[in-house]
Length: 226
Image 1: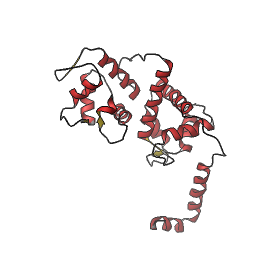
Image 2: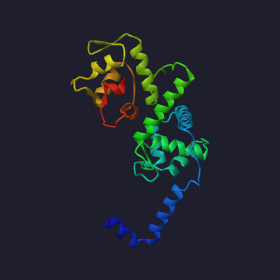
Image 3: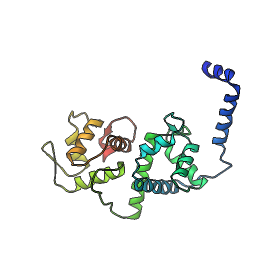
Image 4: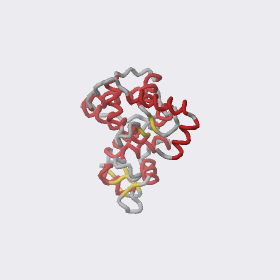
């Protein structure tokens, strides 16, 4: 117990007990057994599809759900956010989704965790369906669309960036790694995407970096991009 926690509790005993009881309720799942990770990914892919249809970014949805404004989304906040979006999800799937997203096992989900999990689920759904994803035209509405557009541009074999021909992830990485550091920062990724003729807002660009940056270092290494 830290000093400020003790002071706050003594100054407002009723508030302290209310917060404690709310935390107990949040963690009490009534013995619900979590669905499988595959079912969690399927649920997230469906949520991703619904967000895309509503033209909402993951970041926008996260900010709307984070009613406590602590930069984290609890299971209760996620459940409420899904309900407001008209997305029906079972208790077992909700528990599985939280476990899938919550990489640091904090009991809550950060924006970066949500972005990464949503995009991973959408990619897995596309691969499982065996369907080639068609790149949309116009500005990318989310990271998933931006990544599809990037792949389409690279696979066209017609791209030149800073005088270098790029025809895949490796050549793209080398072309935009201007300082030859072996890692890409946000500015380098932004320049590379722009050179490919892809339009993306700052929010979508942040989601792209978060989706690729597996170790959450803030930089993208070759293996993460490939």
